[in-house]
Amino acid sequence: MMRQKLITAICISILLSLGNDIVAQSNNKVMNEMYRPQVHFSPKEHWINDPNGMVYYKGTYHLFFQYHPYSSVWGPMHWGHATSKDLIHWEPQPIAIYPDSLGTIFSGSAVVDKNNTSGFGKNGQPPLVAIFTQHDTIGEKAGRNNFQNQSIAYSIDNGKTWIKYAANPVVKNPGFRDFRDPKVMWYEPQRKWIMSLAVKDNITFYSSPDLKNWTRESDFGEGRGAHGGGWECPDLFVVDDNGKQRWVLLVNLNPGGPNIGSGTQYFVGNFDGKTFTSDQKDTHWLDYGPDNYAGVTWSNTGKRKILIGWMANWVYANQVPTDKWKNAMTIPRELKLKHVGKDIFLTSEPVAELNAIEKKPVLLNNEMVDKEMDLSKKIGKIILPLRLDISFKKTNYFTLELSNETGEKLLIGYDKKTNQYFIDRTASGKVDFQNGFAAKHMAPRLTDNATINISIIADESSVELFADDGLTLMTEIFFPAKPYNQIHLLSDEKVLITKLRYAALKGIW
Image 1 (tube, rainbow, N blue to C red):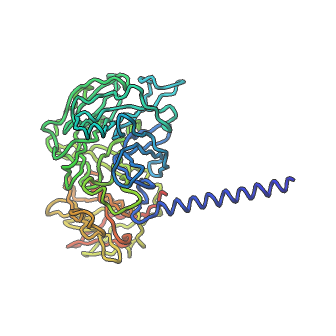
Image 2: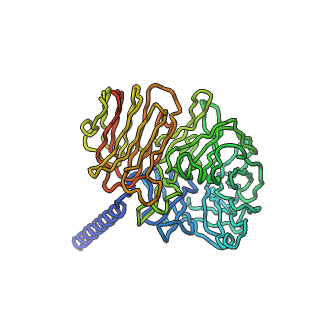
Image 3: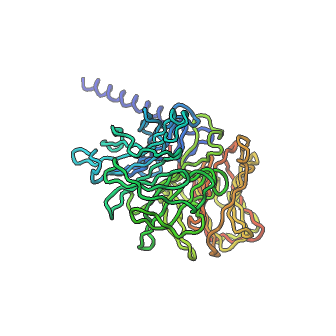
């Protein structure tokens, strides 16, 4: 009898193992389609846009996002959901928040209500509270102006399920067609919640003692920054500046970005619990590429400020040549401040957690390049996804050319004549799905240091450029017929590479 039970147990174990292998193989196949990002979050299927409700709680990073579960183009918005322990590997979760009679679920945020100010907590367990815009499509079609209102929902099981507040909406629209994207934070000096809300092409601040009852405090934006389109997805937070606290306000806008369509600007200033002020004169862009939009930060991460953005652009997001799914998120980025002359800039660099998926890196030092170098002869076979860090002693011009055997190529470089970095995707692959996608985009260099350092993270269909320790960023998507497997360094002069570090990256699926 014991022998029979043992044999049965072994057979069950084998069957379970085979089943798990089949599921794993199926998942790998599903998440390995043409153009599928291998180190960036993307949905298994259907449409995503803005990241929403990002909150860190009990060792888990929650990523909610605008999601259309019935199509791979934009439609009635839900909050999709994924979780991670390390910001790199993501586990899909069931849809978190569905539309109801008040409307579809647009962008918003989530907080840990540690003091249970809302009263939603139970048995000493603080609730997670989500704050989001509800978009009444029927009201919009009827020609009303108050079809966007702010509602809340709460979770008492660590973000797994959400219960909508019975008295929604908590902030009613006074009559603006654009009245959305609440980002909420706790303001400890006055022990109250602060909401940053996009209203037309300005930001309105509200305060609340309990996340249910809100009072309008002030507005920011008139005559400040870029106004080429409507303001969206704001974020107000504190960043440490050598022991001094400075406030940063992120403002996404569409159109009106620095190159084409969507873009994200920021203001460095001060906030007193009522009013945000800034002495900043120029428009500062978070990312000069066309494909980082609606980025906001995780709440409850302490002094670390970690941002993720939507890796797409409203000009062509519905037309990109993927069928089963549409769009992905950027690599999570840690935000810091840096002084350059009299200016203060917000820098972005890949989170340190990315190092855990690097394969054995290849290092080079003091390599002289006489106008051209095939880097694959120095660092070995080129495999996407990858990370490449390069420092130059001094250079007037260089181009990194990522290419494949079909002749498709992506150009990344710097030109001292214009003092600009650039990414050129004119010949990067499939570009005919939108007029204007094939273009060369520019970004200013913001420091005059002789040494130039850049870091690029290249995935199957995207590249992120971090230059000068994250002072200048560019994010671009592309769609080659075959993955890039060659890298050449080109210049019109001899150039010294002081340091080069190359690492292939392990896929996260």
